Amino acid sequence: MEKILAVQSLRVAPYEKAIDGFLTILNVHMERLIISELEGRDAVKTIYETRPDLILAIGMDALKIVKTIKNIPIIFIMAPNPHSAIAGKKNITGISMNIPQEKQLSAFLAVMPHMKTIGFLYDPVRTGHLARKAQLAAEKSGSNLIAKEVHNTKDVPPLIREMDNKIDVFWMFPDITVITPEIVNFLILFSLENNVPIVTFSEKYVELGALMSIGIDVVDIGRQAGEMAKKILS
Image (tube, rainbow, N blue to C red; front, side, top):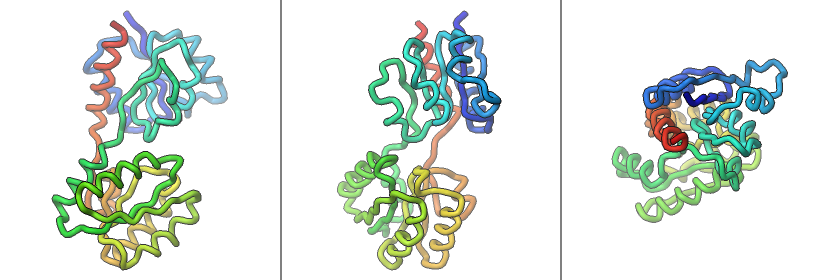
């Protein structure tokens, strides 16, 4: 029986649910390697000692570690914006977490047809490709975008303040330069004080005060990875 090694950044519920989805497709022997629990051990060396037939990398930290491995097929899941990590890697494939910006914008407009001007912030290194897709989607829909580049998290609050009275809604991107717990708190306060709704990529931000989110089904992502692994192993 083939041996699959799940390398995950840490133990969190979404990752565990993705693994559950994966295992509904493939009845295989799976070993687990949790990066946060290695206690100083060399992760890559440990992976080679395990001698897996396939690696399932779960989370961006896991993908960054396994991308140096060349002779074992790797499938990544739950890794936001993995493009720079996998560029030129022929043995790595995976399931994107990104819902097309055109679909997101269409859903937002269905709920808020009056929404004409949308603001968002992005780090060009991390989410520049998403910003370009968002701009194309806005052009097709007839919406206006006020997009500002961010290179440092400390620049986010003043850039958001500059959007006051200029935007109908703020579009939150999955960009760790822009989105930190402190910035989220600032955004929610800005939203309430200026009557500017927030649309986002995760329901956890709706619980904090955003208007709506369009997210992913982590169990289904696991299933898709399972189907991909089945093809690779066969």
